[in-house]
Length: 153
Image (cartoon, rainbow, N blue to C red):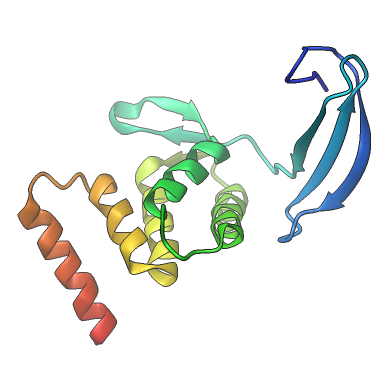
């Protein structure tokens, strides 16, 4: 594993343990060149996934990109980051086991919205405002009103 500090090719694993959700192995490493310590994660990947974007543009599925977008929606909300990791791991697991290696980006967006709806209504609305491309305040008001009525109903 290349050192992120000095670029040295060799590092030594000092500690390994599973993550809280059991979906990855967390490894503490020490560079043999500069002695700096850093953390890596090893995850199971069942298959290579390709995301079909608009206009049939394709790009590899990026778990970290998905996590970043969810974390932006959940910024400053009282949500344990471990729950967001678990949401992303669950979405990735579902995508990998569904059979088709090509997934429409809209399907991923719907899965995120379903997951956020159960976690936090504000994060859900924030994500939806970008995902559904709200153009004006009226769009936001209508969507927020439908979330409020669902929560009361």
